[in-house]
Amino acid sequence: MHDLTDDVALMRPVIDALRASGADVERVLARVGLSEDRLPTGRIPHAAQALFWKAAAEECGDADVGLYLAQHLPAFHGLLLEYLFLSSDTFGEGLRHSLRYVRLLSDTLNAKLEVKDGLAYLYLGLSSGTPRHFSEMLAGAVIRMFDALTEGDFRPREVWMIHSEGAPLSRYEAVYRCPVRMGAERNALVFDAAVLDKPSRHAAPELLRMHESLARRQLAEVERLDLVRKVRELIGELLVDGGATLEQVAARLNMPARRLRERLAVAGVRFNDLVTDYRCRLAKELLLKTDERIEVIVERTGFSEPSTFYRAFKRWVGETPVEFRKRGRPGSPAE
Image 1 (cartoon, helix red, strand yellow):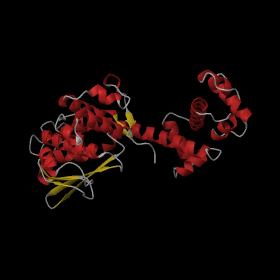
Image 2 (image 1 turned 180 degrees about the vertical axis):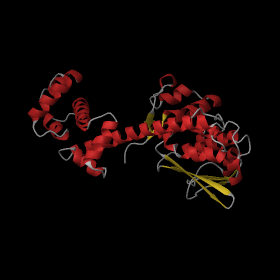
Image 3 (image 1 turned 90 degrees about the horizontal axis):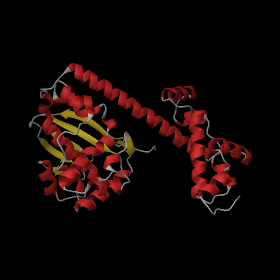
Image 4 (image 1 turned 30 degrees about the vertical axis):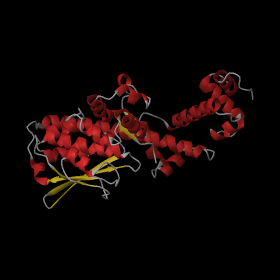
């Protein structure tokens, strides 16, 4: 499976909640190698979630930090999906528009709306291994936002959580203002379907078209980065077996080689450049961070002969592998 990512915009409401709770935001972010003044743009690794929530729990002094921060979240977060809601004719239309683009927030999140017997079920699927704090915070954030979007008409009937262990039920019910079912088959919000027909006082067809156009472009960019990430990962896997060709990678992706070449061209990259970049980065890492002999590095980077590797490395870096290792690791033995 490829590396999962979240949009950095997903962190901003949580940062606001941390600040509102009185926590030291910079100390929490420092634990995951970030700073509020220098937050990256675009996507960040989802793997950082576990470390972030651990740091937040310790800083806030609350083992149920997702619930704790849900009480301090702002109603609106400035996300594109919120503008899709506001510019739609009704709350239900806004919700359905937004569900098409939920991946803009996170690779780990998928959402689906079902209506049955007068009740609406919003299923919020998360990848396995996602900390419970994230799903508990997310449920609180969605309830708070829906309440604001419907001007107080949204009332959750029930919240379902997959995990069976967590805070006392009374605490969940105090935060979500409804009964909570633990150990459910799916994470979900259950509410009266009638609220889906609530008109939006900010409905504007022109703005909705503009917001949807922007959402489509952003989703295309996420998918572009996803393809490049997948290809890089497959190149790494295939190099272990001695080679990584366009045809081999395309076969792993279940698409014709020509189609993969075309999609990479649209993404602004060439396959051979991805292979070269991967080999160069791997060679540098092995030279600086391991004691592997050059012969082993030659094999791991997919070269058939040491002389070919030497020439390629000199072309990439401007010095031989031995010179590069010696400069980067003073005192390392020559090979």
